[in-house]
Image (tube, rainbow over all chains, first blue to last red; front, side, top):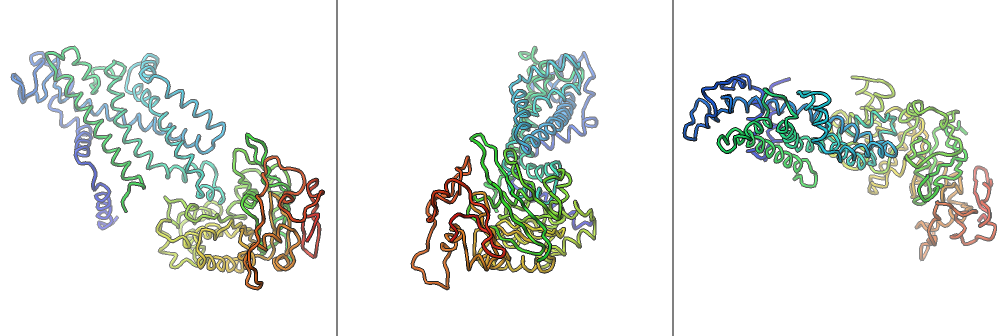
Length: 290
Length: 322
């Protein structure tokens, strides 16, 4: 690839990002970078305990120090370090769960929407059932049957979120499959599999992209809820949800243990939602300016 | 007369709905010879499009089904082919151009990719050979500078150009039969004339047979060697184009022709055919046109008339031939 082409690509990227909401974008960038570089930037090992430095408040409160910027928890572990590592865990679980759940949901939505009839009726009833099932219950059931762990949480979240993808994608496919270019694809002799993968899928990617972004927030929230309930990543590996849970008994005296991870959850979810809204507006041809 | 390429015999395509069976095609018979253009004319809902979809075995599902008859293409009944075999006919031996050029191109692929798709699938061409075939298809459709147009997306082209691209996709594998379903309805009059000339040009070059579906007698006169007139799921009259215009025998054809403005006769008012076509849901016995027909009498309501030879290659189904 020549430098000119690379410059062109960069320019395209710059053009595409113009008008993006800045604050969420910056926050997400910091979040992703800190997750990627967690091993290098944590001031302390996240599991290192220090009984002499228990419940140290954050630096801006009397008694706090710059040694522990956001303070320490009941076992004297550095909160900032744990949040950085916890962020990585949350991000990884979310991404894998979205890939898995989104993949399953999209596949089911495409098949149901394209074939219609009985296949559609059956798959949509299954989807309805999944939507009606209390999501925390699914996670707790899995936690009991498979045992706690990274994989269990990922599968649990995937099982919680796939139905929404199936629903939305199916609805989208129902309208696209009636368009003439799908008939045209049949006329030139495409098989059903080929039509679904090469003609329908690329036409639902806009919807999929919006859904994905909007769901990152939800998934982080679900993961946090599960960890808060103790059905998430088992200790001592931190995740944002379990950090909030750790602090709940000390909230009157050591409020920072719960507050900062909680704040991180709020900011992340908000950022992804705002970004998702912006992408939707940008991709919606009715709102697009020529 | 040259070899018969397609013979449709007593074709019946029905739609099974909750309210009953809709007999969209109810005993259609016609044939197309090699290199010939057959026009199928009729009003909306007469079964023109369902006929063409039946030939490709792409009747809309669920609900639609071919329940009877034969479609013999090049000596073989394609209704007996397996789905996989049938797929190898579509786009390769039998192809189709749809009505709306804007809707029939996939917005996410370039023109080049879309013309290449059938070639890659049916002939397995790759790389330069593929590119050459695509360019020659676009050139046959007289698309200016095809090499640079390959990379364009559909939205970057005008309606007329897009319809040429659709034509290019249809003929890229050099099919023996091309079904054109009102391909010029969405185009304006001058582009329409160009497109028709182009189709005739392609036919001379490749000797493809064309089934031309339309409701425009002007297009029939320009394009077609023979015409089949459809009404309510049946072919009511077939004849050579000139014979049909000079000597229509079925009252419906006469009515249609009288509703077209003409330069060679002074008419104060255009005639119209009163009433609506019958519902195809549980149709009454007898001729579907009888309630709208000026010369209908009792037998017309009892029994559907047989197809009668009324001249050389001129057939009509009516008890009260004009």
